[in-house]
Length: 103
Image (cartoon, rainbow, N blue to C red; front, side):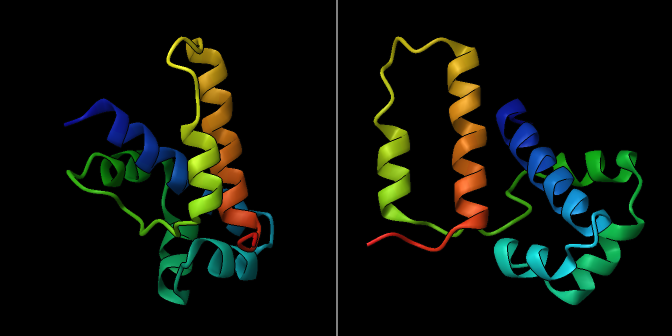
């Protein structure tokens, strides 16, 4: 199991569940592409089940690609420190899940 894939899956699942718990089910469905069934399941899942699901050998979600935001993110210097890269990753996930594509 790739540790990066596990972390990505787990982060996504936690964000999705956080939106659901904060009474933002519609936002979770719209921004993250969740179905009503997925929302219902995620609402009931304890953290241990989220971790098990995150350990799958593939993405647990379908990314919504925005070429402009991805190219901006991938323009990172190779010397960027891990903390800055982690912050940029969170920024990218936030942008991709909450904004419409830019022209």
